[in-house]
Image (tube, one colour):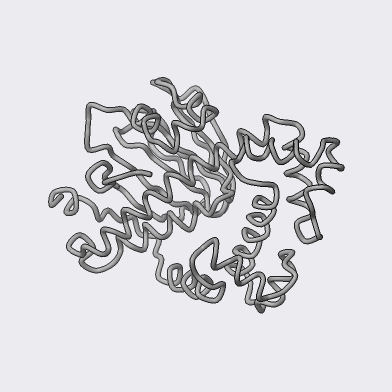
Length: 307
């Protein structure tokens, strides 16, 4: 687990802009690690060590991490491109982000991810499978509170939110990387994605992909450190979170549409995983998002100077 984040990392920029069609950022680089999350629209990132010779395109629900000193610029031709930007700066200027990430306990146990974090890493792209957007929004909300820099409780919540964000960002990449690396796991994940509303079992999934139940369980443990049923549950809960955010459907309907046998089973699983009821989750999401603005903000100089 990441310790003492407030003494390790500074968030130097936290912005939530909406740019109109045809924007093109001036090429630049900086000493921060930058996370850019596309909430709506399509964005192309041109990047390179010196010249912008490479490009990657992101759409809604995808995000990228640009490592420090990577020259880059953002461009979009969609009518509107809405995104979040978070820039992280290591307080120890003598340590690289790649080295710091590789030294953390939760990453050192994931060799597939460590292979990506070498000295020449410039950018990594992701699809959000672990509520990264909500955690970026949580940081945006916390630092927007009045007297944030002087409030000890806000600083604790801020540190926790950063820890969760970094873990989820890395886990998204591992989830994608591993699922693409084993044909049985990949097939099973597609079956879970498409069939989580039905009564899935380890035996039925194993039979469908042509392996034994015990072998399939072993594959999932090796790939995700989770059981097959754990992954099914996360798929169902992820869909429920989406419905809670995007619809006003009743909890009984959300439970049924997410593959739970009853509203009570849904609520029990939700509280166990997220530490709050589905109703509280929905209410908190509404409260967090209703006051968002598109004005670029920078709240952190005072915090850093006082740390």
